[in-house]
Every structure is written in structure tokens, then in C-alpha cells.
Length: 189
Image (cartoon, rainbow, N blue to C red; front, side, top):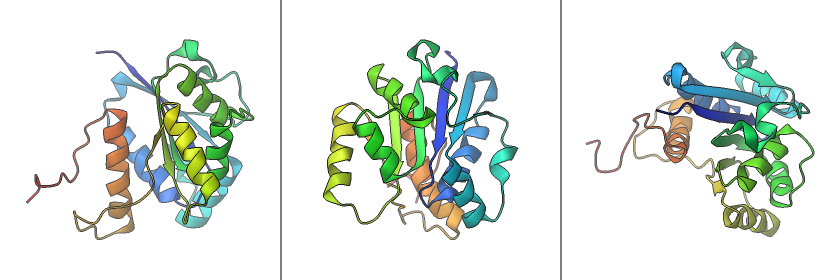
């Protein structure tokens, strides 16, 4: 089995719970078969602290790269990172990716994923969408990216905010090629 190499980027959109649940899920995977690099915007750190009342993003066992560290391995296609998940993804970040503006490590790494035809998953967190958002999502989709809005499902009857966020993150993990279980329609009765 080839070792998976994943970039997790966290932007300042509301929804730090999604990033937390994603990092928790990834930490439950076989760490011998995965390399994870993390990059967070300044706003992401602020939103995490505000929404979750902690700075536990510092507690994960992954290398965290500065938002302007263009020497990070995933700033180049030669490092062969196979998947990037931006969670949550602000509309500003999404717009910069759609227009090819690589002004920080998050947008550069996303550009690399698209140019190398690797998996890019954007967990869009905004409501409602305006026409610019929709057209930017279309552009990224046409370029090979996957837009997975942070739209929870209720089939599994979640009882906590974390369980609700997990309905989105389980779907993201499926899209990234990981089977982490979770509710499956007509299979969990």
C-alpha cells in the first residue's frame, strides 16, 4: 500500500467544528500509512478559539506550516501529496483558487492539486451563495476540484454539534478515499 500524503487547510470561515472533527477522524487512521501537513490562516486560528473556546488545533501530531511557507513540500507537485482538503473553505479562498491567485500556501497548494490532477476537496461554508460564489464553484469543479458544502444530514439523528459536523466530515473522508464508517443510507437500520 502506498503511503497517503494529505494536506489539511483551515480557513477563517465559520465552522471550526468541521476542522476539528476532520483532524480527529484523520488521527484515527493508521498513522504509519499517512503523512499529514496542516496549514491554517490567521483567521482560522481566531475563529477556532472563538467558536470552540480552545486552541486545541496545536495538539494534533501533524506538522503545521506557516501560511506563507512556500518551502512546504506540498507547495510543489514533486512532493506527490495526493489529496488536499480545505475545511472549512471561505468564499475568499475559494475565489482566489478559482482565479489562480496563489498568494499564500493554502491557495498555492490548491493550485498544485489542480495542475497535477490530484484530489482537491473544498468544504464550502457560506450561506446563501451569490452568483460569484456559484461561478467560482463551477470553475473549480470544471478544473477537477470537488465542492462539498458543509451541509449536514439528519438521517443518522445526530444529537450533538460534533455528531452533526461528523455527517459532513464522513462524506469528506469518503470523497478522500477513506472508509471511516458512519451512517449509510438503507444500510443502518
